[in-house]
Amino acid sequence: MNDLIARARDDGIDFVDLQFTDIVGTIKSVTIPVGRLEEALERGVWFDGSSIQGFARIQESDMFLMPDPSTYRVLPWTSAERRRARLICDIKRPDGERFMGDPRAVLRRAVEYAESLGYCFNCGPELEFFLFKNNTDNPFSTIPHDVGGYFDFSPKDEAQSIRSDIVLALQQMGMTVEASHHEVATGQHEIDFEYTDALTAADNAVTFKYTVKAIAASWNVYATFMPKPIFGVNGSGMHTHQSLTDVRTGKNLFYDPNDEYRLSKLAYHFIAGQLHHARAMAAIVAPTVNSYKRLTPGYEAPVYISWAQINRSALIRIPRYSEGREQSTRVELRFPDPSCNPYLAFAAMLWAGLDGIEKEMEAPPPVNEDLYHFSALELEEHGISTLPGTLGEALDELEADPVMQAALGEHIAPWYLRAKRAEWDEYRIQISQWEIDRYLRTL
Image (cartoon, rainbow, N blue to C red; front, side):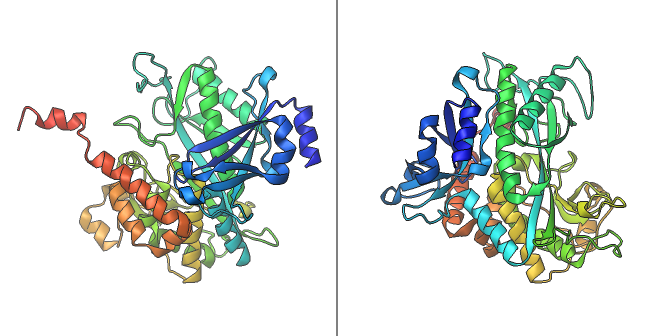
């Protein structure tokens, strides 16, 4: 604790943001003067949990934030006169027990269970996002900030400069950035960061999102992680690479040198579990009404519940093995999107995979053909089902899947279903412009 206080003093910190997320992934924060940091680290900071969506009833509202010292980071975009740092917090009950309505606690529980089985769960999420021009006359304008395409590069392109500033900010916050590039759609970008344990990866994903937004704002553009903001072009995904390593030795447990795809039996069981629970998992990893506008054929987003190595239309893709890189053997889940709460998403992915391992589920044969060109009969012959077509359908699947509800836990599962049902019902009764254009004069 004393080391952290000294570090904050050396960094010239004036304020500290104590951060956490609600059940749907919205970042919440309370700011304290740096003079209160010692007290916060020793005793936590009390707050009213009844005011946070999905946390507690009024009669159970008292909770406190316990900062995780390992998450201390200086926010590089704040001014030297009012320098700020952040700490991600765990949420505790008044008796000091872990609050299981905290999404970070849900992931901690999943990770700890995996560790009790001898596994360390590692993740590498790839969050795509759009940059749009600010329009004071229309704050909901979706005019792309640039005209680039996939991997396009121009040294005088502002988008390249914005990405560079984001990368520098992430690095100053201790994240290891591996690559940044323009994505397929106009105005769409991706920045990839280090593959690491699931809890750190989730913390990084949350940090990444608000860093992107902060740097974009400094350039007078706005960033969005909305899955499908523009009709007719690719949406934004959060493809997530996953593996299990031995908790004692660090050995990659997904690797088998004698298998055609270099996958172990454990990896195949893990894949089978995720495929088995995919329809219910969708409500957690693709959690918005808009998510299902992205999950349609033709835009590189998966729809069909299958796996393959060279087929990007499959739900799970196996990156090709490179000689001497056994530790990199992994599976890529392609249907999550960046609107999800990463703590809940990674917990769901892990529980689904572990269920496959524990029940020794058999993965179906891979399908390396382009599934978008399969007829309904061909899909049926291959035993390939599809993801839910709407959030409402996905919530029905979640409600019927005890394993995925167990992933969320007894506290969050009913809150989450209730919140997302309300979102779906609100959307369902709206009258869209498409309906007006289609029906008003013709019916």
